[in-house]
Image 1 (cartoon, rainbow, N blue to C red):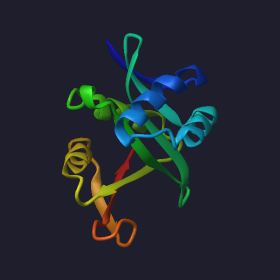
Image 2 (cartoon, rainbow, N blue to C red):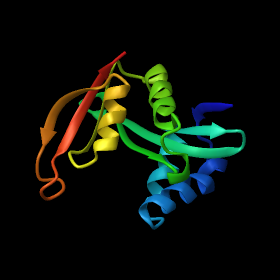
Image 3 (cartoon, one colour):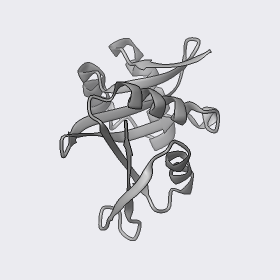
Amino acid sequence: MKIAVKANIEDLDKIMNIDCEVIGNKSRRDYIENAIELGHCIIAKNEDDIEGFLIYDINFFECSFISLIIVSPSNRRKGNASLLMDYMMSISPTTKVFSSTNRSNISMQDVFHANGFIESGIVENLDEGDPEIIYFKSK
């Protein structure tokens, strides 16, 4: 049975394996470890396996901001991103939740729309030629 829960420091190596599989290196280890220690990392678990994770902070104009959603490639399109987002909405310390993705990332845009997020603006110049679309959802 799949569940979403807050990550513990014991989950760090499994989370890092997923992150490394997706981005090809372990450069975000300190960032992910810090998020776990702050209680800002959520994992999607299936039995003892971690299939994906979400990291958020509350520094975006005093609102929650989902800064990272990563699902292992072999577990995509199985509801993990939606499970993580649903859990995030249930525990969010703020009423407003924001996130973003590149205009080129159509599959993530579809995930946001399927989970009730609406477009809230565009930020140019983060990635050359690929604007960032900001998404919003309220509790």
